[in-house]
Length: 112
Length: 113
Image 1 (cartoon, chains in turn brown, cyan):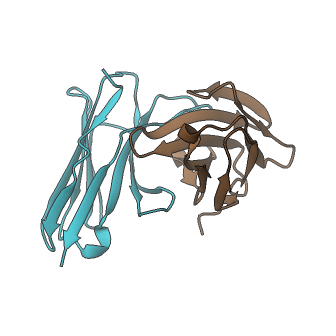
Image 2 (tube, chains in turn purple, yellow; image 1 turned 90 degrees about the horizontal axis):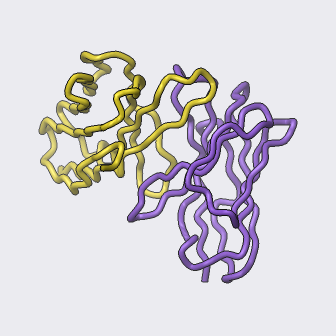
């Protein structure tokens, strides 16, 4: 157990639907990062939150949004889902640059 | 040109072989260099972390950074079947609490008994 908890582990949903992925960071880590991993693109950075505030944005679609709550857990909301959104979504947390990232086990999203 | 380039492999070696995995990068501002190991359908786990140019050793693993050539390597000695996984290089600029890791696409390694 890495200390980063992601739920659900698997999600199957239809095109056009909306889903919410949840992440609880490692105890004491203030930063949460969301990544999307597909076979052809590798790990793509989506967004970072630090202590409740958005700090960096990557290749995140406008249909996607995220937030970090006062208890530091984070949610990634994916709406108007398309077949191409099928991927592994990872959350990672960090205490700072010297720590590296600690990843959760991911949520496998399948859009049918 | 992508910021980080990594040979995707796949790489297949016999047990006991020395494995060399490599990445090149274009962003000279990168200062932190990491290697992650990812088993199938699992989250990546941090394997090695280096800050400066030079070598860092941890058991059978050695990470090497050459900032002048913008080239990093991971060597695995006496490779084991349990080393079979995807290896991802990652790097970042200094940023305190605000830093983003840029990953290579990963190299799939299979160690055959």
